Image 1: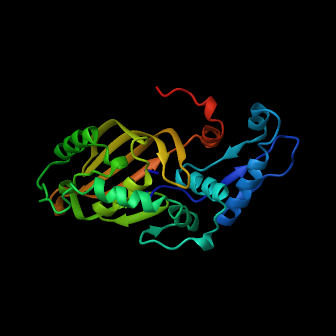
Image 2 (image 1 turned 180 degrees about the horizontal axis):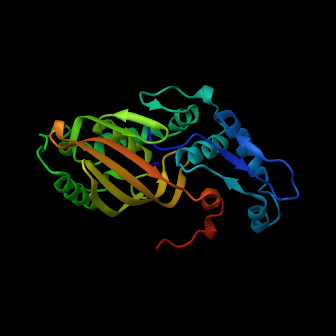
Image 3 (image 1 turned 30 degrees about the vertical axis):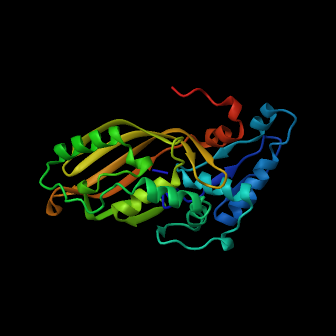
Length: 269
């Protein structure tokens, strides 16, 4: 789902100007992302917004941070050399760079206070069947969607818990929880549970709707999209959750337009 570690894909941004312009721009790393987005935004200077929209066609592989990072690098004028490495394992350079665009001074303190009441050392609830675990997860998420707020239920997670998405992997439910808490702008970011079910032996699937603002640079808005979260339990670990994987798709050009043309955003259903 789109973190200090979180989300997302290796940039595969392709900006195709209108048919009257022959060139197609490709971005394959964070340096090219900055240059490409600068050129793309340069296309947005026609006299009308409609002309600008007609001139801009953006293609993305599904992902969250690829958009956030490329857009943020352009908007803030930051280069990878200005970012420091973090403790998470990033699967591409752009993801590492974009994580450093988080407004960390504010969100880290807020995260510490907001999660102070979470008992990270709570006794583990073992011996649950996959179906029983799914019910607890569903109830917990509908009460507090920790995929966004970070206020998770440590008693349901193994000490060996790992999280991964296409660009980030990390260990530990506390690290994951603090990451998402800092990544999303609390009070504006939303996680809505659609359904939760045991879908295979030792497998729980959660489908949820995510949208709102993330704490990258001055703030970047995510248009509503669906995330499929797969949770794996382990009988040898007492039936606790040992692994989480997020998968998602975004609407290519629409996400860029969503941020550039805010007055034309559709009403949320």
